Length: 260
Ligand SMILES: C[S@@+](CC[C@H](N)C(=O)[O-])C[C@H]1O[C@@H](n2cnc3c(N)ncnc32)[C@H](O)[C@@H]1O
Image (cartoon, rainbow, N blue to C red):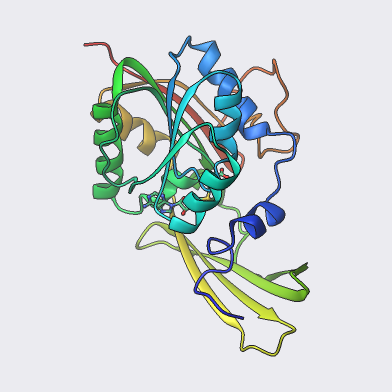
């Protein structure tokens, strides 16, 4: 096996492993945008393969997708001609003026330190028109308080990609000092190449902590809840209203930049 990151080096494989055939994430985002009468200019930070940006474009929005991965951006440009796709770091960016910033599937949790989170929110504030929206969907740090069901035990998965069968073993651990959820994933293919270990980490962000950061950067929280959302069980459907609890493992945020 070659390559430093099997998933982000192969965006098509990423979509095969994490399918969203009904475009739930894009549709959920669009419903949030409509609920609060957002204007049409949307920035999708951490856009990955561009599928959500493409959905928002297809319903009439003017969309910019931004990501750090050149492989993801090349795939997005090739597959989805509507939006513009640019390279940017969500820790600090300046990409123009928008009516909404969206950040889906835990991309926001790549802000691992307080400085990075401040950099992201300061950039959103600069990017948004007064009254503009920040919409995010991510893991919920509070889920791990008192629960270990997702932690410490390796989980296995097998799939075939371009004629090679891969087995992945994934282990999640909590790093309490850094306040991070760490993931080690080992890939072994049946092509005889040595196994490759990949390490990722996400901020464990707690709902009240997030509220505090948002208030400090001039945002009013309109919604903060654990579902229904595009990656909850049961999943969100059109017209289903947001909940109020923040107990389950996904967190959904809609915040508005104060007008003054
Ligand atoms: C889990 S994927 C989510 C992709 C997409 N939002 C979705 O829901 O399908 C996270 C994305 O964030 C990108 N990413 C990671 N760190 C980043 C950073 N510092 N700035 C911008 N993008 C980043 C990765 O390249 C990847 O495409």
